Image (cartoon, rainbow, N blue to C red; front, side, top):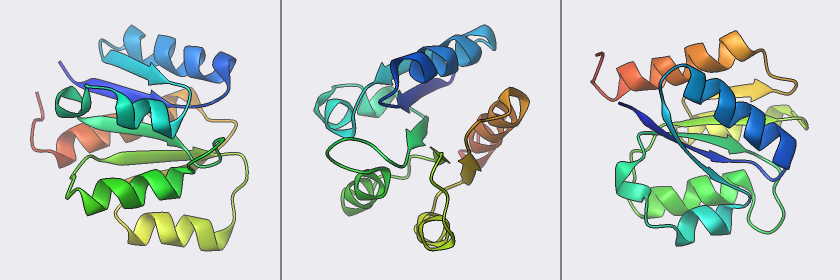
Length: 124
């Protein structure tokens, strides 16, 4: 079973994403900030990260950069309500698997997560 981490500061959105992904059989770990994710002990069990770009404290791009410094290969699906070309390009150039705009289409989010599952080589 694929374990997904969700980093989203909006409680309602975080719960909605978690419920959606759980309904597809994914195990979900949810966090309200990048710092909460970093301080958690679940890094080794997570195979995909759904990451809000704009967060209080450390931003999504800053978390992505920290994970890169740690040589993490964790696939990231960015979500944002503040899309701009510079942010989108930076995220994708730094290895983000997908960059989606809020409000998210549920089917598209599920497809993107499934795509990262294939990227990590476990198509089961």
